[in-house]
Figure 1 (tube, rainbow, N blue to C red):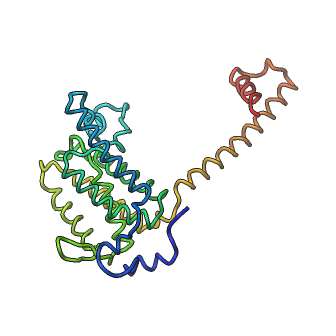
Figure 2: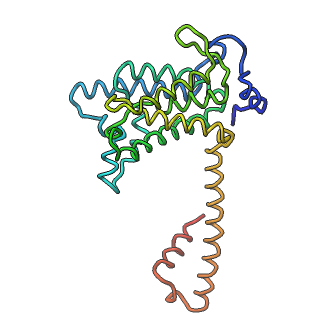
Figure 3: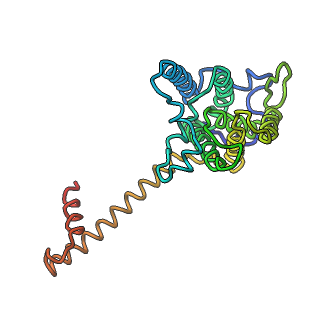
Length: 280
């Protein structure tokens, strides 16, 4: 079920979502939204767990769970697809996880309230995958190799998506209120300029990938599509079509048996009949 309301479309264009005032009123009140809360908890617990395990010498979990572009290029076809999601739950230090957690709390919560929990978790996961995949591609070029960790790409997607929906929402920059679109543009500009500097230890290209995905997600109207429901509907349609195809194949085989006997069937066809006989 979507939390989106038709009247919000016009409000998003005018930046009139919510009441007037500063950051607190614009970002909504009440409890932290369902998936935003769980993502925050997961990030914190995994950060603590990995720190404790690696400090005790139990193993280098970061190496296996981070997106390592070298692994993707030199170990094909045995690709670590799990890295495209797991890297987003790893953080290098307190500052890293604190910044991402605060941004996720404000902008992830803002976006989840607008588009609903199911759309939000699909969006957030897709943003992680897009950022990780971009890193695997750019990993063959100088300055973009190595491992990447952190939710920054997905967080940037949340910031930009929220800015496209509610551009004139006021946020506090240091002590000054500025429109959300200005803050988002500023962050993207900093990332673009910083990409020209090598050896910074920050995956700015993953931030840009997330920002672009967040922009397209809203600009192209993807937020109006319930991808979970669409996938379930596609699976139901495919299952029904499979049943129709199996029934037609079964009728053809029974007709052949009646005409030529069981000896006319191949082993695969006999296995199909055996499988069909076990169906309710």
